[in-house]
Image 1 (cartoon, rainbow, N blue to C red):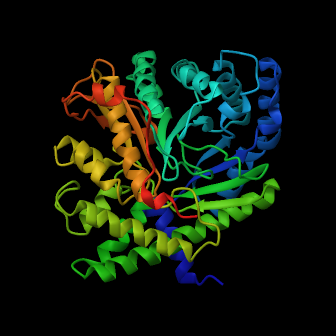
Image 2: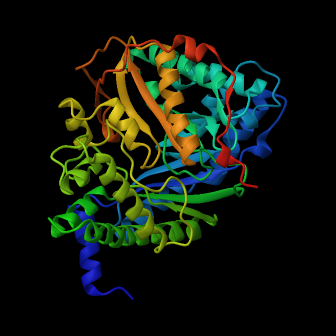
Length: 452
């Protein structure tokens, strides 16, 4: 039973420390929608999503009102469209994105993810068609998010796909040049992508999942930041324990909302994702947590160690609060969505190289980073390859969401608004990776992948 003190503490976390449920995401299998006729397939996709998710938004709003817990986003993830559309007799995969977008609008959700392909070991014809369609699909839809998994610890890195995705990112930026390349904010390239991630832009409904499922993503950097203010100067053992206890309370709230949504929507409860997801709001920053541990500025020496502690303590605290923890679970470091990261990047303390090092110990990877618009496709591919290598060797999920902003150069700012915030354009290395990326083929999986 909750005590009065615990209830008051939770209310303070919500009212003063930016605690919220970042998203309720309904995953929906679209495998039953496959059809040789692309128009029929699109209609089936639209109908099934609307049928399954018609009560998602009102249910989330009811829970929000009844429990007093902010639920920022209601989202949908679907089976990777490259799988669903593989049997269609068409070369044009843009209509599938249009069907997803229309369904998202009908259901009233914030985003829909799953315009995706899984190509870690090779490319099917359907994968190639979908990847070619991504720039146009993201330019002509409002709520569709896309992801491509180019590597895994078990398969290695598909460098042909890496090369293609560097080109796709460039084309997407140019196709959405009127919005500073905003289409790239809806595109993620993964290594070791997970099947139950509720966060965009990388969410998709894995083939190992149920017909439909409810996944919840919690947040709370502000809560952790405030908790650490009470242990200033104390040893890291105390810091870790403080983060663990705070993560436990945050996750219990997520578990409550997930169970309630699952019951009301008559949909199985999947997972709670423990990730600390920042926002551009003051006091809701992962960077400020790291600085509260004693760093003058995020990005200076010691940042990677501080982030490793934070990520580990969040996971340890969260797994005690829920039997079904999944997704990405840890600490996100999206530059544009974290006011502390933005400030550090503008000051020159946080560089692309330092961010890459930090991704070795945190959730996901190089996220929401703006680079000069004249950055080549090969350089983008090389950045993707580097990040995929970190994920492959360390057996963790890594990703790249990068925006080569057309017409922008180092020192400029890309404004995206809302939770996506603003991104200072960061410099990239100028040495060419053209010949490296041109090799293609596959980087073999590491020795420790042979675990059977």
